[in-house]
Image (tube, rainbow, N blue to C red; front, side, top):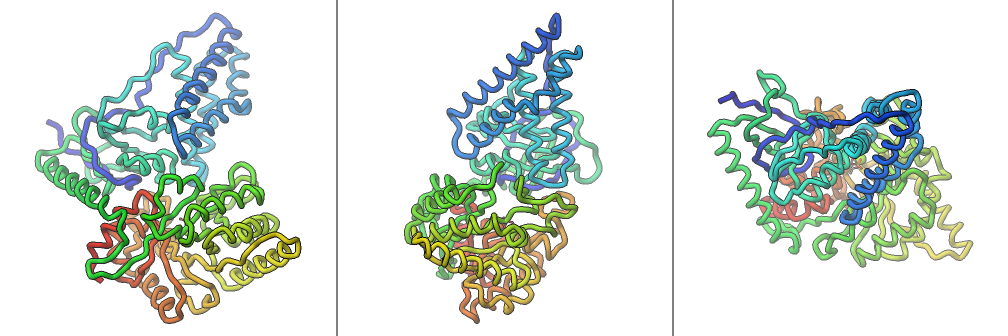
Length: 533
Ligand code: PEP
Ligand code: MG
């Protein structure tokens, strides 16, 4: 019996799984070379068509985010810029499988070495496309993981995730990966436990033998291979306590959130794509505390009409409840082609309001769409990455100018309350300089990374990136107390708001308004009910 081996990483989707490990990196594909270059070319064309057909079939049963990912992959497969180098290699005598692999590996390397998390996360999508076509080129299909297996490897392809039957349990354990990847997003929305950035803890090497049972604790971000009897028993206790908490949480979903001592807490939701609201019953939340709009900014910048329709849809869904839409926070880990600039240190660069003010022709389109949408509900607008009050004043002045211009043209519009994100330490330390803002929303993801000097997407410094560090909590408490004194509403919309482990500290810091990912709504309300403040 081998010694237990422990690996520690970051949780990308909370939950527990116990089962055999399945090695994702073992893709054995046999390709039979053809007679000549023409046949090789035809084989690759057929394989691309087969892969495209398989993706199209998956789209029919996919929803929201999953369908978007598959559409992106089909578009990539149809892009000559991607396949061109492979066909050129075939013409110069290479077999189709080697030509395709080489061309795609070069593309993947470009994504993997990007210093931006967003692009690194997209490498998995391109790897997936590579393997889909290789699979279609080969005669044998890929070995399927047994039911309930823990899929273990460098990274996992979105199609692999979508093709896996998760009804019998199972999970994902990755050596690389990112909590911002498409698969992480899918895993969270479907409740599949997932851990990324795994490293061996203590003595021992990367596991050579993956046989046997593994215990995946994706609540705390760890996995144990060849566990001892005591470890299995402890794991099962934690796993059933998690399941019990989740079941119990379901009861809280439809109730207003109150602490054990009867203090009411508002719980709103964070959304990105307008279609996110389709799966949420408005009765279960107090509105939208954060609508991130950078995700509307895809390959091309969205025009006024597209934005207006997106904002209006969410406002109409929310009815009388407030919807806080954040102006575009491009940059940092959210690059937008044609808008953001390449920078050595994008988290400290031209992102958020800084970029919007530097590109007023883009910003004014969003401002007009927001002013027009405001008549359809209870809109609030906030600016990301505010560091000095002049940024707020300039942005507010642009809102006033655009309102006058719209009114002059007879276009129906309304000025929403304008607030700021509190996510740069300069604001959290001196909130009184920003008292003219209509409201504050604490962005704990960025506030934590800037206070602790620990990037939010770097697994190597994840132990430092904690909202519960006293330095961060002291700032949260100070901003909240300032808001109380000055009657400026203060909420929190970072991921910590939905984290049951952080909720007690946030409520103790004085917060009474949290905005959380929709999948965390029930657990957040249940965690609130356990707090005595
Ligand atoms: C935050 O920084 O906490 C936040 C909510 O904004 P984002 O995660 O989009 O940067
Ligand atoms: Mg932020």
